[in-house]
Every structure is written in C-alpha cells, then in structure tokens.
Length: 471
Ligand code: GLU
Image (cartoon, rainbow, N blue to C red):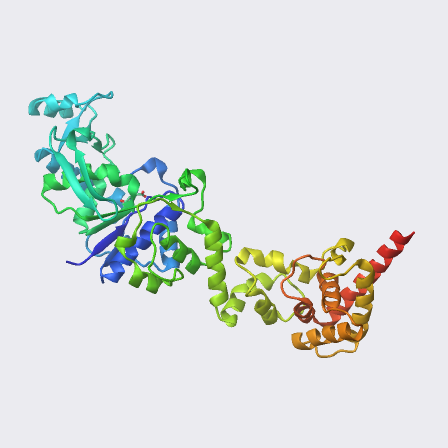
C-alpha cells in the first residue's frame, strides 16, 4: 500500500514552529517510502481565518522545498483539498453516520449533563423538528459500554472506556463540520495511511476511531508528536506571539538551519545532528520520536545557523551578504570582508551591527585605548599610532599578510609586544571594542586612504584628550 501523509494546517496567518515540524515529519515519512505528501487546508473555523493565510502556507511550503504531491494547487483526484469546499461531503457522511447509529441530531439549546436527551427522540419527532426549522447540530453517539483502544506509534497502547468520551458536535448549526468529524472523513477519503499531528489530539483519537469503526473503515497509523515548549512550563504557542517560520527568517536564520533544527524538536537522529533535507528524509525514524516535550532552544538554533554559514563556500557566503553591503558607499574589498566575517557571524542579522564601523568609525572613546592584557594606555597608544602612520604612509602593499608583517616589524623595532601596536590600530580604525578581524584585516578592508585618515584622526583626538587631562 502506498504511504500517504497529509499536512493539514489551519489558515491562521503564520506558519508556527509546531506546524512546520508536523509538515516536516509528514514529508519525511512520505518521501522515505516513495509515498505521497498531501496538503489539506483546514479552514472550517471561519472565525479564526485570516486573510492571505492560505497563500502564506503555499509560500512557506514552496520556499522550504516541501513540495506536496497533492493539494489545492495540484489535484490528485482526491480533492477538493480545502475543507470549506467539502461541506456537502461532510453532510452526506454525517447522514450516513446517523443511519449507522454513530451520530444523531441534537436540538438542545442548552448544555446537558451525561447523555443527550435528543437520543430519546423518535424518528418522527426528529423529522418534524427539522421540518419546523428548529436549529440543530449533529452529535457523535458514543456507546455506553466497551473500551476503545489503539496503538500510537509514539505514545504506545492507549485504552479508553467509551463512557468517558463526550458526545461532541460533528456538524455545527451553520452546517460546518468540526475538526472532530472532518479529519476522519478527509483522512479516509484521501487515503491517508499515516496521521501525524500534535499530541493535543491524542485524547480525542478514540472518538475518531469510533467513527472509523462505525463506517467500517481502516484506522490509519497514528503518530502523535510531543508539544514544542518555550520552557519547562510554557507551550510555544502562536497565541502568545511565539516564533513562526517567518519570524525566524526575519531574525536572520537560514532556511536550511531552521528546517534542520525544527526537525530535531522531539526527534533525534542516531549520529550527527547537522543534516540536509535529503539526509533527514533518509535518517528520519518514527521510532526515535520522543514522548517528552521538546524545548525550543534558540541558542542551539543560533549555533546550528553558524555551522551552516561556516560550511558554505566563500562565494556562496559572499553572495548572501552582498545585500548587506549595499549601504556601504565606500570602496572596500567586500569579498575579503566576507572572508573575515564568515567564521564570526552566527546570524545574518548580526551583519549590519558588525560592519557598521566601515561606513564611519564610532565616536572617539579614550577608554578603549587602555587594555590591561595588551598593556596599552592612551599615551603609549599615541606613540604606537605615530610609528604606524609613518610606516603605512609609504606602504603600497595593503594585503592582510603584508600589513600584519608590518605591524609586527614596528613592534620588533620598538622592542614591544605585537599587541602594543595592533590594539591601538584596531581601536583607531573603528573606536569599537569588538571588531570582526584584527588590525590587519580591518586596515585591508578599509584600504590605504581611509586607514590613514582614521589614524590621523585618532592621533589628533588622542593628542587633544591627553593635553586636556594634563592641565
Ligand atoms: N488543522 C489542525 C491544526 O492546524 C491540524 C490537525 C491535524 O494535523 O490533524 O492544528
């Protein structure tokens, strides 16, 4: 039998992390078995629907490469794939279920305890009420006795006494189905073999099984996934504005790193955790899905993103960074800048802040020249910069290697440790405590003219500041 999974998001306006995790697991299971991955839009809760949300779902699946084999824009003969276009189907099956004794009309305007009093109505009474236009819902009829059991691939054997299950609504008074009904009808009619979803549906699954049984349909394989938590006690939830796929992209994470990291929420590979989509398809194993809640650890994602950035070729990395360089209207060696940044940046959103000194040095800050370990202070920094200025003025080879050699030479000539020269140069060129790369890298990136200009400015600033303090 061909394996068929479905991703069934509700169009609520963002691709939440938990949703994307479900999509990934569905995709892995289908693809590792040469099966089909189906997209179904669950839009029966019209109040929650957000304009443009369906397009966002298409867009994220397209961008992430999770291409579906069947779905709204790719008919595979089992559609429509948008639930609001299937209302007649649900009505037809609800009627069939009533005839089979698995559901009943309910005209109650108020809640009831225990059993639905409408179960006592005769066939004629029901017909009369419908004729009279009394509003109704269709409720599931639950047997009084017996137990319903099933085996979940993650949570194991589950057994529930039927009398503990409630007679939930299957079709609402406006004719729309609830999830509790639509998921069963659709999964059956769409020939879904493996149902992957969040474990919040685990406790209702026995009710779904009663519907399958009433129709005499095969029950799919269930894979309920653990929740994704913000911390030990709080669920990551879209209602609380927690991260969506788009948020993570906007924060500067790479698509590949996001997908890789989200795949590890509640699942662990046997070996290395850094895996491409194809490797994930190969390695994914339902047996290794955990029951325990997964904690969304942004620091781990950051680390993983850094790994992806560092593993790129310099050319690829450079192309990724080019848009960030657009605001720099300086004539700089941007490829070299990329080379300097590559080992140092974990998130693309750090780029602007890291390179901001290129456009303009930060304001002069005398305290930066005092560095205990480097044994520098404003006075000896001024001396160092004067030596450097002299040497650089007649240096035409501004390659990093040559610049570094030159700084070392100056240190040697003056019987100083290298840091006594390099630290003041780095501060003079940036006025920043932390910079990408050392004095040689930065002088090279800025080029001769700019480097000399900034050293001159630093000499002037230091001289002035020292004069003021000596009065
Ligand atoms: N529409 C449901 C949701 O977005 C999906 C549940 C399922 O996968 O069956 O939570």
